[in-house]
Length: 250
Ligand code: APR
Image (spheres, rainbow, N blue to C red):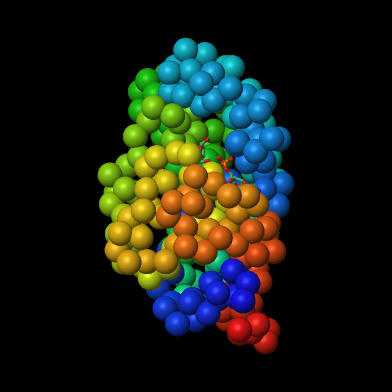
């Protein structure tokens, strides 16, 4: 029995499924991930472009990366992996998605229980005066968008050196602690505290199913079932198997 078929059999039996996603789930929507060979960090040093300190020191420079990232995200559409999770949520199998991504593609695919662990680009804030702007309000101010107080606005995404909201931490731990299965999709699991979710789930008796192109630091430590391959294919097939629209290969 393939790893995918094993995961499907389990998910049909114990349908309280939590999901953790990373940049890999959106690669097939045209958004590069961070740490693969062609990832964003191969072109921009995260220490120079993705820390709060770097933004405070030289916001214009950081905005060169942000402008490119936002342009790519705006052009992206959900792929079959995002759609598969939304279908499984509608079918009552997926209870919630915790995503490290800021692209909004889970919601665009129809998922409703989505926790954006690293924020999103739908609003921007001023680090000096604290004023918050919607994307639309900031869009007419130019790139990079200045706040009324003169400082440059920063998208409400979590930079290295910023803390994850207490609420997001709480809710993600709750989801992980009360699931039977956690799907870990397209993440290198290099970044805490998001990468704690599979461990919390496992400590509470859940099965950890990892879907990735290649093994990660989780694979030989906490993963029970590793499903290799591109998420747009594997997650789509998994949803088909679980929701029964194809004959199962049990
Ligand atoms: N299908 C499945 N997995 C894929 C695919 C794909 N088509 N393409 C890439 N991957 C996998 C890679 O093998 C890798 O394990 O997705 C993972 C992407 O890892 P990262 O680039 O490290 O992205 P992520 O895990 O989301 O990074 C976490 O780090 O830089 C910060 O804030 C940023 O949210 C990000 C966090």
